[in-house]
Image 1 (cartoon, rainbow, N blue to C red):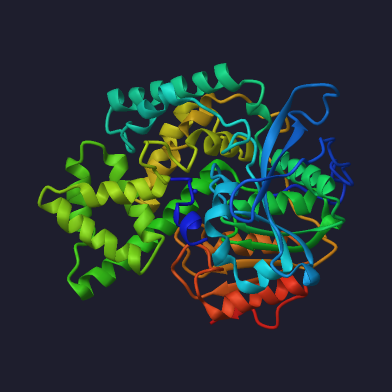
Image 2 (cartoon, rainbow, N blue to C red; image 1 turned 180 degrees about the horizontal axis):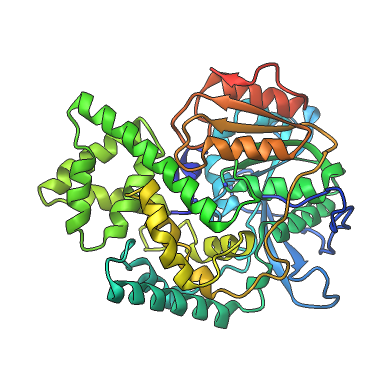
Length: 468
């Protein structure tokens, strides 16, 4: 459940940082070397290019990879303010694909005053994509809450097989898949574009990339919007527990609405889950719906009602939306890239047995989602170690103010993550939004939309810190 779902791609829209800190080893880190950009038309008003970057910035003459980049020029070039990088999060979602499909949602001012630029982060989309498909479906089919030793061993075996396949195919890249590695790629892209500073709009886990960049290159920040903030300095247990608790709270809120409107509620959900041939599908469908009220809530009520009479198509459709499944069976969300990033970014549990020992704690706080959310990370127990290890105490005083947006009842990036992330940056202001959706900007809320666009045009602490 670590993913931050497709709605980000559809509406906004499948969410750390390092540091210019006192005594930080990354202080004033130079940009990694990179190739130049050669642009070509690639549909509509977009131009595309490939940027070659080192896999390991410290290995001179070592392996490289190509990043896919897309650019939409400012609608009013005479009023252009620079480049705005956009990332939808996930991790594991193609930022290029998101920008190409969702740029109209980013607001008139944004589209007119900035070149909109996106790049697929390493291992994702068109940037050396990870492919561990032979063992992926086996992994996805495991019970999300193993009830006995046999089910537990099946989950361990599937997770190990998936990690082994990924290591065999992509062993040279997996140690360099962290948000910090992608932040260095972003710096290379900035330099290749000839920009002195960047503006950045990151949603959900895309805030981890933005915060990492701000920590490594604080002087390069012109404007930074982190919407649906992920606190990057926690361990895996904290991530899984707090996210699962937030989704559980959203289910409680849905239940209250269901009782008022005569919808099918969590009792029906429990019944369907107990008899589902693939129980993970029910949980992914529920998470997708809970993150997108009010439409998603209505979709969930309808799906549960249909499933109660033997029609599972509504549940399956919601699960497919979660992953962005296409007609050819491929997914917009790369599970491989998501796990590779999460395993690199976070403090992992020591062993597979440590995951098993933690399941009762997760179930106590979130009986529907807790164990499943933790076990979705079980491949990390067998994953190659990252080159640098997880981030430590991120944060920096940037050259410009940072804007952190936190929905009060966000079901996937809890409000407290926004609180913690904003506190790590002395130049950050947090804006709280009274909303149950996941992320805020680009949803038609005039308050937050105008506040973000005003900030991007003239970066300064906002006049208000609450919407509405």
